[in-house]
Image (spheres, one colour):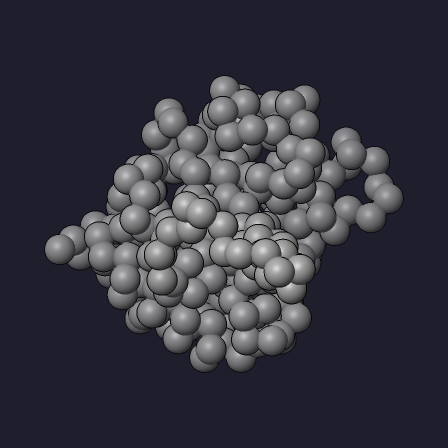
Length: 259
């Protein structure tokens, strides 16, 4: 069994590797087990939006942190030697303390978003997270998220690119492992972000209309995750089969007993 520090080092190594790290987001133990069972799985990432929805809360730190950490801890238990990186929203009011508590349930990395707060405040949050990892003896792999695109409003894309680069460089200087820039990023924008932030230092989200993982990999992106969309796929399948069953359908052949 690997130590927590070793799992953190593994996650950082996966970020730095030439091959893009593909993490399929999970939201509870059974979804985690389904993904863990695949030999391609190298790390587990939780989706904050999906965990909140599981408990009936809207996204955006409306769910109590205790519920989030309880679920994440349960996922860590079934993940074994696989590193688990958690979505911790904006840090629930105290990013350093929240990460310290997340480390306490076995997490070795996290997304923490800046919500476009003043840069100095956002850098201070990154520094607090890094200190929390150091104090707990875990080289915490922070996927520092900037909302330069998702909260851009109607400003020109060039301004969002420049903002993401400025923030990304500052977060890396403060000790972040990689910089998460969510949004539907085309090849030209992605190329500029990688040039400005660094090869294998940009993390993206796979959304309808975005590039494929292989295309992002060719552009030098470190990691791709899928946020709440994996839960949406699962719920779409559930609703579709329910509609079929109401119409006197049957459970589809080939349904696997994954629970």
